Amino acid sequence: MVAFTKGHGTGNDFVIIEDLDGELDLTTSRVQALCDRNFGVGADGVLRVVRSTAIPEGAALLTEEPAAEWFMDYRNADGSAVQMCGNGIRVFAHYLLRSGLATREPGSTLPIGTRAGVRDVMSSDTGYQVDLGRWRLAGGEPLARAQGLSVARPGLGIDIGNPHVVVALASDEELAGLDLNPAPLLDSTAAADANVEFVVPGEPLVRDGVGHVRMRVHERGVGETLSCGTGAAAAALAVRYWAGERAPHQWRVEVPGGVLGVRMFAAEDGEHVGLSGPAQLVYRGEIDLA
Image (cartoon, rainbow, N blue to C red):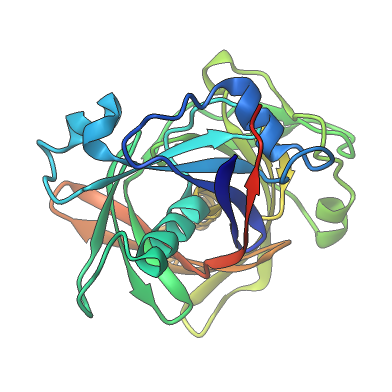
């Protein structure tokens, strides 16, 4: 039997497994079984809590940040390993602190290893905020086709440690009419492995200096999810890019599972993007992975 904890960030839900010394053989089939909503626990993905020293990807990061004791080994529901998860890392940090595996002084940050590098998490008014690091335009402007859209729409490729394509729609009705269970089709092989976000800018776009956008997402390896943290950041970055130089650097992104905050800020190595939002632990249990 393996102990687990169920958690979520704005409805993006995860099965959390403690495997501190990296002894569990977390195969693709085991991840799929855990995430199965009919026969398993049910989740968008698995967060394995493992010491950075116990996993090659984590050990390599300790030269960058020796304080990154813990590594977030995130797997999508299909079992595929993922570089980064913005909602997942807030839930992961919340679990570390609640379980006593990590401590944090008020105002300090908690460094966590991921396949996209070390990410710093700290408390915020809404729960936790994470510095997602540098972002960049990537993947060009592929056309996206999705069920519910009569014609293909141009998207914008954005990389935030993992790849995204953001597509603007004209109205809430168009957004609501999408069927995102099947994966949207992209006409670019460079963006073929990307998460795809469909967004509608708020009306007005900016209120009290904060940009507003609504979003739905198809996550690779999962399907449509109630939220995607890095996707929310990509959506805000794309709408700011389209809006031009006078657009704000602080955004409120509405997703089906709630609201996330996104902030762009200058750093020594270029512009970073931050994500803030809630993290909750729902219940604990045991499951027979055999």
